Image (cartoon, rainbow, N blue to C red; front, side, top):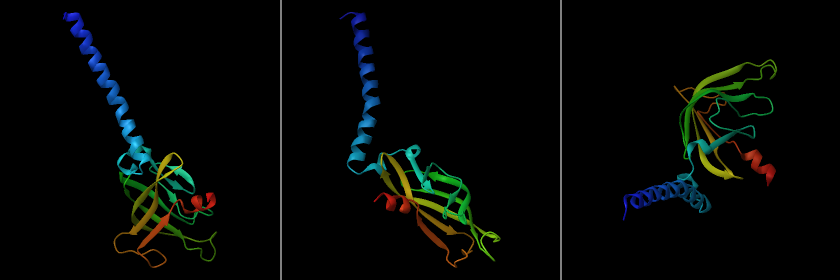
Length: 160
């Protein structure tokens, strides 16, 4: 075998390895998604959530009352964002609507938030359950210290 033949075989082997390495991850992801095991296969950049039925990736603001914006989490800072869970902090704000909502003042408190429950909707992936917990022993205006909201509930109910 000549040096030229060895070089051709070597380069061919390297090119085949590169081609297999490029295709294999996509096949594994597609197989995992098709089997319903997509949590292990989806990458963080492919995961979004919803703010008023609008898909968003790592939002800095999430409204809980889309009609008037009277309840929301603002100034969100994400410490982690992955297909299992997104964890962050922010400021919960709620209009007290006194004497009416137009004249009301926003009550605010620091919160820790998390997004959970990855689902595939159409061809995209979303964390749909938002959990908001107060910090420093504060309570929400309702008197509770925790709120859980399904950010896709309305969207999915309209489509069913």
